[in-house]
Length: 77
Image (cartoon, rainbow, N blue to C red; front, side):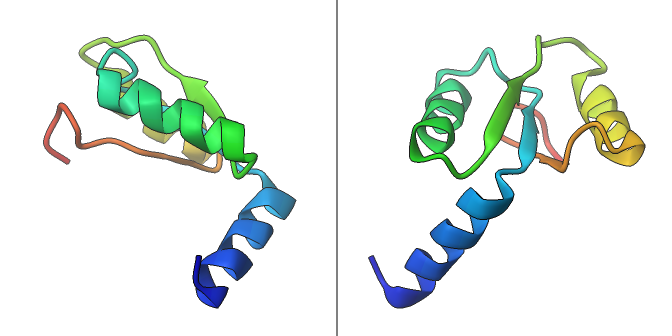
């Protein structure tokens, strides 16, 4: 791991943001959420899939209930 990635990992682990995964029915998304949780660099929120999952994830961020969300594996963003 490069020095930059190590610093990034340490910073993420210190902050440990809540990240919403609104496409949690996709196996790639489940694997990614599990990996960031295992590495301790984020607290994933696996959101049940629905037609409005992306909007609900964005609403969580806007309300301060999450720090960000990751999407685009299934739905175009």
